[in-house]
Length: 197
Image 1 (tube, one colour):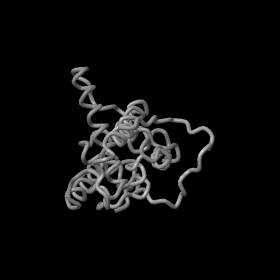
Image 2 (cartoon, helix red, strand yellow):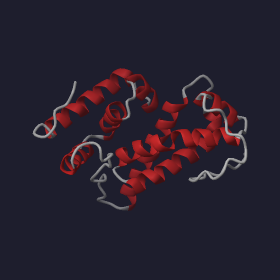
Image 3 (tube, helix red, strand yellow):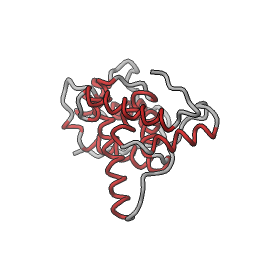
Image 4 (tube, helix red, strand yellow):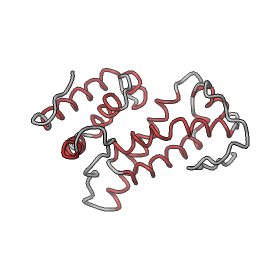
């Protein structure tokens, strides 16, 4: 098995970079054949969105960074398990969700009494600081499956079908999780935030 280094800073462009028009699936097929540049392109393409998703999911930028590293390491290790014809993005987010869940379980085991992180980091453009703190606290009160569905659908803009594929659940189950999570958030934040449907 060829070793691939995950570089957090891409310096220079000594070799030709795969065309931006290459689909994730085409890049994954090339990566499975040993094309390191295809991995680099996948890494660059998904780093920011995975980091954002994992920060919201874990509530900690440091935990998210660790989970992102584990996600891409898992991608390298399990690249041969990717099924041709499948979509890369849901598969990658499933790996990311599992990495975050595993890190939380390990933290809980290593530190009895450890609780889920108290806060999720959102972009500063999402209202005032007081509202962000309330939203962070409310989001962390949701069970992880509901929180993932709400974050992916409402904050990342994923369809329910994409979420279902990523988390390994039916689309109906994902819709129910998102609906229930949104209902809890509505109740917790009813005095400060109006939700769209």
